[in-house]
Image (cartoon, rainbow, N blue to C red):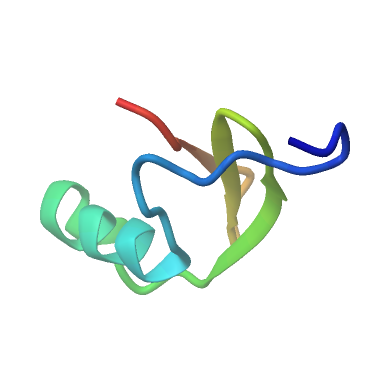
Amino acid sequence: MNVNSMPAAEVRVSPHLVQRLLADQHPELAGLGIEVLANGWDNMVCRLTATEGASRMPRSP
């Protein structure tokens, strides 16, 4: 593996998944936009637009 390569995610995470989870678990936040801030080795971090909130999603089980 190249030192600069990121391993494939074991769990597929996307802004769409974050929106679906918000709709299911926090309906009051479901209408917010999602902006990917970081997509690293272990996690993807998204900002919930119009708030100071963020979501950190694991890329592995």
